[in-house]
Image (cartoon, rainbow, N blue to C red; front, side, top):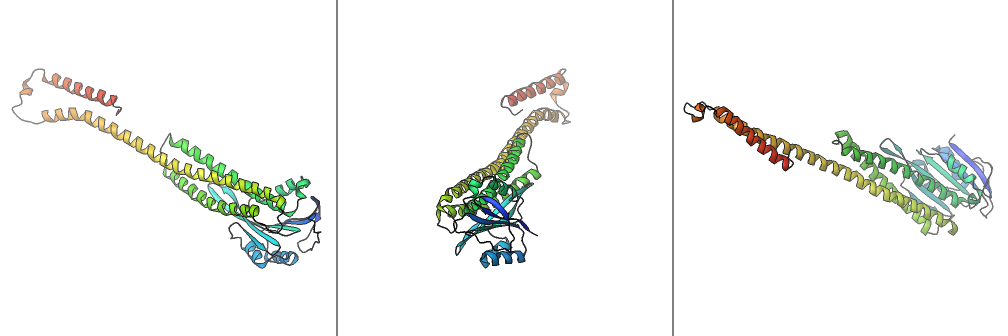
Length: 322
C-alpha cells in the first residue's frame, strides 16, 4: 500500500484517519479538509482518488507519469501543482517529483522518487493548529516551502566541496579526476538551475494570479517561498562562477609553475653552456694551439669558467630565474 498518511482535519487539528475510497463531506467554510499523502501510487489508487475527489484525467496522467517540470494548472475549481524535489548523492543531484491536487476541502500530495517524506512536515504543522486552521492553501504553501528548503543543503554541500578543491589547487596541480569532477559538478548545477527557474514561476503564479482554493491572505506565504527560491537561484549562479574560476585559477597556476620551471631550466642551461663551450674548444685536436703550452693555462681556464658561471648565477638570481 502506497498511502503514507490520510487524515481528516477540523479547526487545525487531526480528527481521524480516512480511506482513499471514502468520500468525506466537509463544510464550505474551510474549517475541515482532508490531507492525503501518497508515495509511488498504483494506477488503481489514482483511479480511486479520481473518482472520489473529481480529479481531472490530465492531472492524473501527469501525476502518474512523473516527468513534468514544475507548473501550475487550473482544472475548474481545483488546482494542480507540480514541484521537483532534489537530493544530493555524492556529486550527483537526483530529482523526484511531487504532484499536488488542491480542492476546496482536500489536498492530495503524490510523491515520486523523493528522498524526504512529508512526515516531519505533517508533525510540524499538526503541532501548530493555529496555522493549520488556515486550510488547504496553507498546507500547499508548507509543502512547497518544505521542498524548496531541501535545495539549500545541496548547494551548500557542493559549495563546500568546491571551496576545498579551490584550496587544494594552491598546493598542487589538479589531476584528471579533479578536472572531471569540476565539469561533472558544473553539469549537474546547470541542470539544477533549469529546475529552479520553473519553481520560481510556480511560486510567482501563486502570488500574482487569482487561483481557485488560494485565498488572498495566504499569498504572503507563497511570496516567502518565492524569496527562498530566488535565494537558492542566486547561490547557484555564484556556485557556477566559482566552479569556472576554480578551473581557470588552476590553469593559471599551472602555467605559472610551468613558466617558473622553464626559466630555471633555461638559466641552468646558460650556466652549463659556458664550461661546455670552453671544453669543446680545447677538445679540438689541433696540433698548433698556443694555450696548450701555457704552464698555468689549465688553472686559468678553470678560473675563467668559475668566474663566468658565478656571474651568470648571480645575474639569474637577481632576476628571480633561480
